[in-house]
Image (cartoon, rainbow, N blue to C red; front, side, top):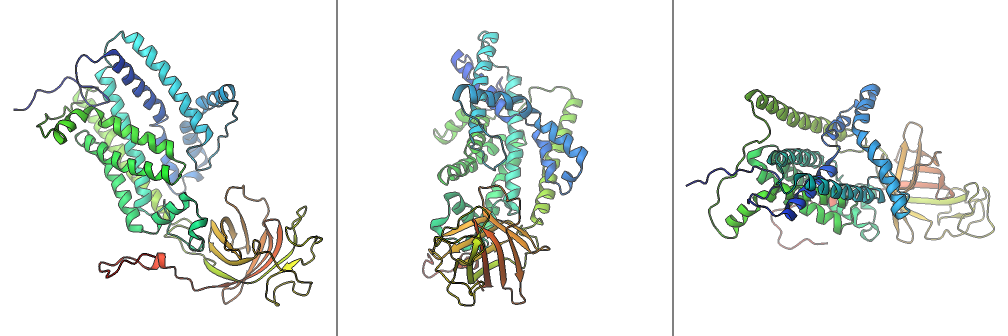
Length: 483
């Protein structure tokens, strides 16, 4: 016999009557904190429009959308920066580095915590022991479902269209394991298997879409929590700077599922029958309003899906992505000759003493290297290149004679025949340090600045097929192929 419907509906709620005041305060704090953290959602849905190819080229529309999405930051950012200076004497930098764990983010987190404490205290004092409104809890859950669902869709499509983790290119394949960072290793092993990356994306899409519907909210929260727990573990143990964000996504998923924990415990741990969940909406009444809300619901789902699919296809065709035409310069090169012919202005080269200006100071081993007419001196192994991996348009790797390999940012202009290689943590140089000439056999001759030295380098292309990207998988393996 089915139990009668409960009085309380979905949301972060304790479905037992007579909830103690302390638990009511904790509930209000959790609602307030997560609400503040999710802001400026749902305005952030408009930010997805920038994924559509050409949207950024519409100056008026893109400016309006950017202003709407950025209103929240205009209000909170000065307060957070002031708090950092006043409480911790810290000057936090607000810039788009790709990291979600900057000093700024921790200060913003502290600001949300303090504000949530104040809101919970005032809220509890005004309610005078009365429980949190069921309609408010239901409204919070709707916001949380769409916030988490849309976020999972954005990350899911970035994996289904394998964009988040690019396949290892010449730059990665030339770099020894020991020279990669933990995050770089994670990106490499995820990108090395397109199938596994797509599988991970499908799991994120499953959790996201299930959250959009009341009947599948619990299943969506559980799937999302499992996926996000794995993502958080990867971010923490591989030092990916998205720890705060992934931890909060997991927190939201757990809070969505929290009201059903007693039923789950009875079912899975005590093997007892449980009553059906009460899925009745609590904050809209008339048939017309329900129809309008249903239309809004499907419009959001369809719009987010369409923007993500169209945007992902556009990104897949962008330079360097998997559907884009590959540059003729892409590949691994052996260094046929290497010469340091001077120093950049104001920079003393770190080789033989007493050399300056444009005099040839050091060359490689080949007698035919550029500048060999001048007095030769051995190039230190820590400076001499032996192999180069170019993965236009963004990344290149230089492997030196001492065995070290460093991944660098690459700026390439094939029309002008210029390129720049510079530290990934530094700003792009204002000038173009190197020019190159490409011969019919694919060889490159580079001349220009690198790391404070003027170089002349000749590169010869290599036929390089890495085992990591060519092995694939096989159903039958007589012996483990573990190298």
